[in-house]
Image 1 (cartoon, rainbow, N blue to C red):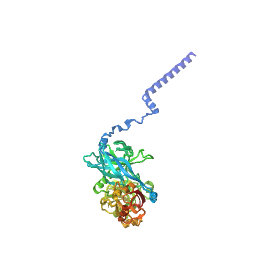
Image 2: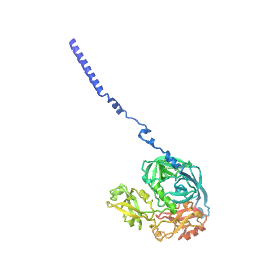
Image 3: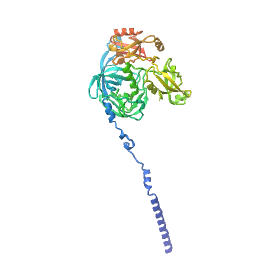
Image 4: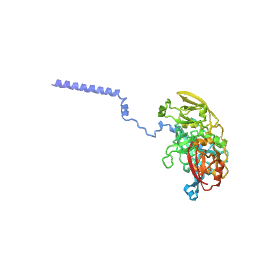
Length: 481
């Protein structure tokens, strides 16, 4: 019995020793893996402000802010507003007139006092005052405005002013840092930062005649009062003029703001200085954006470019050989993938300028040369029209006869066209745009300029103007004299 117990004990101890050896060997082999096993069960946690992953700390906005602050101005305006009730006029009522004050921003673009702002900032203003960053004040005159691009140009009498240099909006990239400089809520000289969120945005501002919209979208905070201010890159170069925001209510910033690209601004400013009015060129076609559904329905293999749906009779496109169904892919080697991008490219040229364009027709690339024309299908440049003087010191409007062919296309029998409006025009204040064809004033038909002058010269109190825009939109406006 003792021998049996001794044998069992020896075997047991041998097994324990063997297990111990195996355990020790495995522990030795896996000693470097223990930490990995634990790490796999408890993954690393990074806080959202972990700076090492972002690289934001290397971005410095101070130079751009210093360059732009002294060149951005504070603009205040006074505008006559009339509370007009057409029913009150019938019963002999008198329109009530009051002065409305507003404010905005502007950008000095030359040392001799030219200032860019938005059209809506100075539209209808009878008095404009500009305050520089160093608190100097000046009365400003309107050189000209362009409602289609929302750009206006002012002039103050001063020299050796600080000004912002133009950048190149074609070279900006989505994700690039930008600064918005302006005067929101009357808080002068305010700088906010953001990135470029998108390019070529359109359908932002409604109710304008023949708008040219290809806005830069940014998330830099822009609020009421920022309109007309500068959008600059990190070098302090001007890349856009802040113009609009999207808001669900209250008119305050909620994450989206829009700026006119500086390449459009440069063209408009140059025209206003040289001619007093903008030389607008047109390609002479109706265009449509292309999406996957449209491409499938029209047997288009590539989603790039813009679709030509119709040609304007006698327009630039028809003369150059463009056909309905063509897909325009580039203007002067610059790719265009939306209608807004194409409009942005064309907006840089004047009637009479020649451009090269690329298009796809029946799956083949075609290159054409095209001479741009005006809305009236001519290559002539428009001369600044002098403001009509008969009772027009208040109205600030220039009128011209309308071609019979245009009247026939619009299916109206009579009318005179508004060819120019001053910034303090009663017409501008009422919301009337250049190009509007007046067909009647106070229910009296207007057949020529003399008739319009005569009626306006004899009218006091309320005025009801009816007519039609060149795109066929009918409208009527009421205001007081």
